[in-house]
Image 1: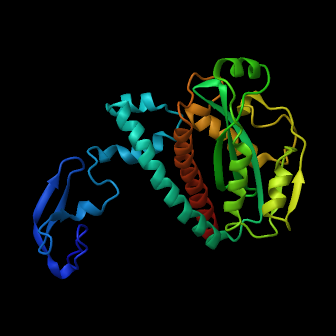
Image 2 (image 1 turned 90 degrees about the vertical axis):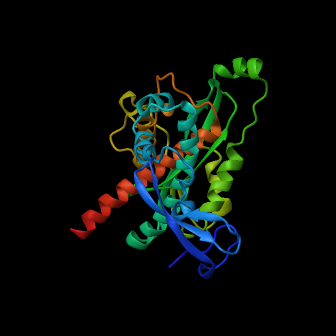
Length: 298
């Protein structure tokens, strides 16, 4: 049966087969069609997300490399393509990952039940220079470390760099509270009203949790000193009550070159950091989901 025309939306009765063509980029054969209503041509490839991409072969390998501490320049050298191609695929793969992760979270809920205990915290990185810091807020399920959602926001420089940053780049607005508020508002559709939140003693966390989850339980823990071996995210304590979120943030820094400490790699744009996080989070959740599902079936 022929598909409907993507140009004029004519039904399949107005569409006829019109030969085949061979696509060299991935060695596949596709059916061509012709619409008798608008007299335009299309094929099965027209409906693909990768429509008009010339190097489809690199998409899935590149998705995997983005989660293995490789920079965009190194990825371009590895596949022998331009950096522009890799930058465009970062945006394309991130859009796919956001859709896939939304469906995956619904599958996780159906398989393992509601997310009733969560932890969240901020990861501090920078764009272009350390004088322009960024806050990435990440929410994880406490037991399984599924990443439920995240947001990124610019924040002003603090500590010894504050005066230097203000003199060099001027005033930098703090968007973290607004983004954090938007993040918790989105989670109201995903989390039950009696969810237990576990965080550190950040002064904004109780405010934003109470605003969107007034009936929840919020437990706070004093921050501990970071361990060098854990990228500064894992703590030097015997039993860390915030281990789930700290371990997840340590994995972020280890698996994504732009977040690694003691590295010359930094994000050039905050929206590209957002895209990279979307790709990694979908891969992270899928890995844990497949492992837990396999253990449950056995």
